Amino acid sequence: MKNLKTAVILIGHGGLPSDIPSEIVENFMRLHKVRIKTGSKITKEEIELDRAIRLWKRTPENDPYKAGLESLASEMENYLDGFHIKTAYNEFCHPDIEDAVDELVKDNYSKFILVTTMITRGGSHSEKEIPEELDSLRKKYPTIDIQYAWPFCMKNFAEFLAKHVQYFNKDVTLKY
Image (cartoon, rainbow, N blue to C red; front, side, top):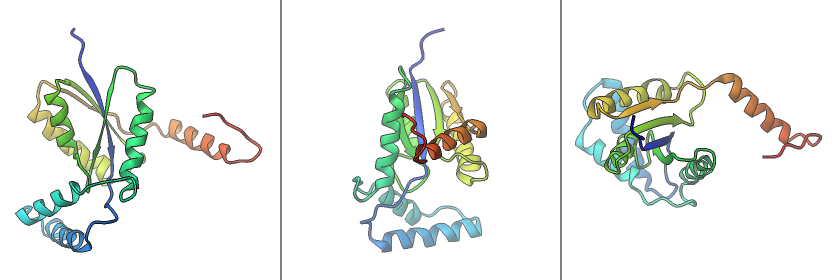
């Protein structure tokens, strides 16, 4: 079996930049809510507003969430030798999952492991939207290996959080 170029796509929720005009966001949200409520098809205007929001110029000052996710991806590189790490977002930021996969396919990556920062069950993004998008991507790229590293082991996550809490306890010193 040949060596596959493997990429990890770290998926975050995405946030709104603090300096985006409120009318862009309000118009997008209005159209989006109506479409979801009525089950109608997405309009050209909603697509254009979504794109304007996603492509808004981001900085650590106007979008600390995006900067934080990129920082996490950078830290992950220290533990995943041989993997390329790329960020993607469910909403409000660029790239979305499809754009991230498309870019990596153009760079000859042939295996993807997608992991989300949305840890617990019960979220529509992690349980419904991401799997639906992956089904679509698997049809688009039938020869590409696309895996979704979810759900998380709650025992491992609980251990991580417990150690993190202990770090803040004055009597306990943990080294990270």
